[in-house]
Image (cartoon, rainbow, N blue to C red):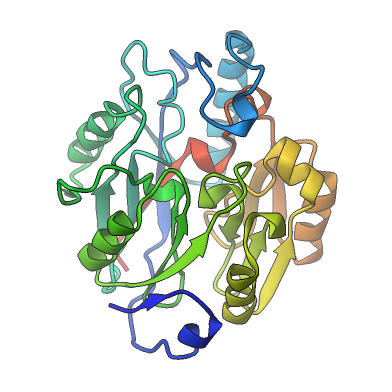
Length: 299
C-alpha cells in the first residue's frame, strides 16, 4: 500500500485494479428524530432547536424520490429515538469496492457519543441486504466512513480527508482491508470538516472542489490527478454546502438548491443537475452527499 501526500508521490503511483461496480441503490435514514441539540460544527451555530420537522420530512421524501427516479433502490435503516443525526448515513459506514471490484462495507467509528449507536443500525441494514461488513481494529476511535473517504473511479485508490472526524490510522486500516493505495488531503478549514463537503468525484476524469477547503499541497495534488476540475462557488459552498454534491452515474449530479453559479458550472461541463431542497439539513451541516450511502454491485 502506498500513502500519497503530494504530487511528486502521485506521479509514482502504479498498479491495476477493477473499477468500482455500478451504484444500484442507497442506504438512507428517515428523519424520525432529526434535530439539532448541540453545536458540533460551524454550520450548527445558532441552530439549536430550529429544525422545522414537517419541512425536514418533506425535503427528505423529495430527495429520496429524486434518487428513485434515477432508477436506484432506496433502503432505509431503522432509526431509534434520540438518534438525531441518523439521517446522515454517509458517516457511520463506508460502502465501496475493493481492488478487485467487489462490494465491501467498512463500519465507521463515530467520535460523538450520540452517534456511536448509528453503526449498529448500518450493520443491521447491510446484513439484511446480504452484505458482509468489516470492522476497524479496536484501537481506532475516530473514522467518519464515506464522509471522509472517496473511492477513485479508475485507480486503486482512496481519497481521504484528515480533519477532526477521522484519524490517519483509520484511513490506513481501511486501505489495507480494501487493498488500495491512499491519498491524503488535509482539511484545515473548520467550515469543511468532512472531505465530502469540499470534494466530489463526479466521473472518471472530473471532480468538483471547494478550493478554500484545502492547503496548497492538496490543491496541487488534485489538479495533477484529475483532468477536469470544477470549482464550487465559495459563497454557495459556505452557505449552501454546494460542495456536498453527489453523482451516482457520472452524468446526473444532485446538489442543494439555490446554488446557481455552481449548477451552471456543472451544466457547462455536460452534467444534468438535479437541485434538491435540503435547507433543514443544512442547519446541521449536512446536505445531499451526507444523506445517502451508495450501494454498489460487483464489477
